Structure formats: C-alpha cells, structure tokens
Length: 282
Image (tube, rainbow, N blue to C red):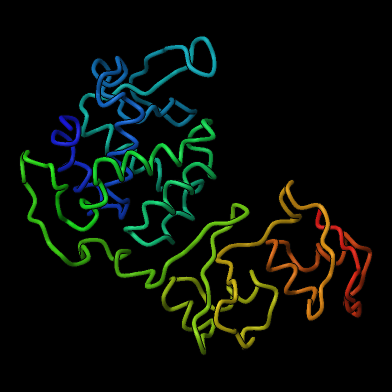
C-alpha cells in the first residue's frame, strides 16, 4: 500500500502520456521490486527489472537473474525508471497491446506474458491478482481504491481520460487467443466500421482475415487485428470436419493463415471439406 501511495501519481502521469494502464504499471512495479524492497529499486531506481540490452547507453548494474551476471539498467530517479518503462513498452515487441482498451488490464496482463516480458508462466495471473487485490483498476479511471488515504495529487474523474488520443479508440473490447489479437464482429458489422474503431485500415483487416474487403461479417465472427499464424498451437494438431465447416471458418477458428491450411493438407483452392475429413493444423 505504501508503494502504491508513493508511485500512483507517477503511474497516472505515464498513463496520460503513453496510454499504458496505470494499474498495469503499478502492478508490474510491485511484483518486480517486492513493493519497493528490492536492492535494484532502492539503490538503482530500477522498478521494472529492465535489462540493459544493446541499445542502453546509461549506467549499469550487475546481478544474478537468468545468468550469473546479468546487466540491468540503473536510473538517476524512480521517475526515470517509470519513463523508460513506458518507452520500453512502446517498442515494436509490445505494439499489439496498444490496440487493447486503455482499461483492459486483463488483456494487457495476458499480452505482456504472451509478448515475453517475463519468463514466469504465471506472470499474467500475478498481475491480475495484484490489480484486483489492491483495486488498482480504479486508477485507470482517475479514481482511487477504497482503502486509499494517500496523496491525492490528481483529480478523480468518472469518465475516460482524454489526454492521450489513443484513449478514444479502440471503441470495442479486444481479446488475445493463440497469441493473436482479435475482436468479435457486431450485428451488421463491416471491416470499415471495425477499422474506424480500431485504427487499422480496412484493407489490412481483410488481408489478415483472408477475405475480400466487402466480406459480409456475421455477429460473433472473429476478426484478427494482425496476421494469423502459420500453424495451430501445439495443443491442436488435427481437426475433424463437421457439417457446415469451410476451410476459411477452420482457419479463423484456429488462427491459421488460409493458404497455409491448404498447404498443410496438400489441397488446392477447389477443395471443399466434407464431414469426417481429418485436417492437419500443424
């Protein structure tokens, strides 16, 4: 709680500047530093466990992590660490997260793990539990946890933040499955409408989903916001065709590029799957 009182204003400032949920920033800080108790945080102001990498030009410190003598960034102040964390997440590796709603802390938590922020397989669950245990999601809306009695240096509001233009879009919830970001189509939806909401050209959406741009969407259809995978995840190796299945529907269901699904099964575009056919997914 002391950590949250100390750094909530900075997390909110970062949210206003970079559209990264304050709840996520605080939860990562709590987990990475043991709520500020780590030597890395106390001596070197590194609150997010960010390593040096080849691009880092600042001060360094070394400690055992994945390797006996890993290099970590050292900052002049905690604010510098928070700022660098935001810039780190703005990199290409985490770009997909910014298509999520600004207050979708669950999506952000899962996305950070999928993008490889931490090697711990329970990292997303740890973030979500921390956020919910301490009501950190309230900061995403400019409010405060029920237990909070610290410095209230920003004004609570009950509306969406407006400082960052990204907060005004996307206008619909996004999800992640098979490591892919997607939305579900509404009734009478079109790629044009989804494009307007999500800030992605309709032409790209059509390409990502292996359809023409004027393809008629049905309510509940999966619409991927990035290129699909070349094969299904390890969990799914084959699929037995059911009545009404099409190759496109199967490719959408498992997040596989349509051309790859045909190739995996040595089929051409004229092939029509029949009930009982067993298709390879990887």
